[in-house]
Length: 169
Image (spheres, rainbow, N blue to C red):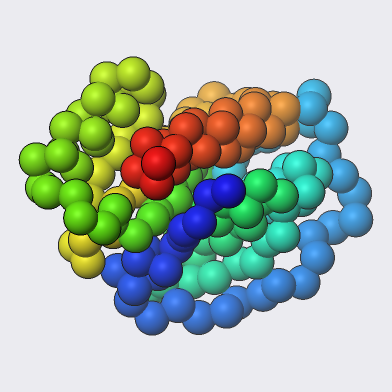
């Protein structure tokens, strides 16, 4: 099971303030629901539809969704590329783990590089505090559908699980 989690990332992100943990609108989004922009509400709705426990947190005035998936993976989903705090065309998805104990820098960097070569649409790296992460950036410049967000979240969770097996053999 994925054991990480955002402890290293949360430490790196600095002070986190709980903004809300209240349920999103009871109306569920279907896969064919058009999404004009990424919002905390539509991202939360899709993640909850996947069984995730979600809350909205904030870092330096920037809100994001913290999601704990049924698999145990904890990830953040942060709308980005926004105009005036709305009309967000980007979604940054990230999960972090403690650095593997006993791994040299060379071994860690090779594992990260090999992982990125296998999954070219995912970024893997080391945070300032030494924890490691995987990240995916998604755009919806001209809109998308709720089903695409669901697929992105499901795919990210699967790839994060593969990453966890590499760094936690």
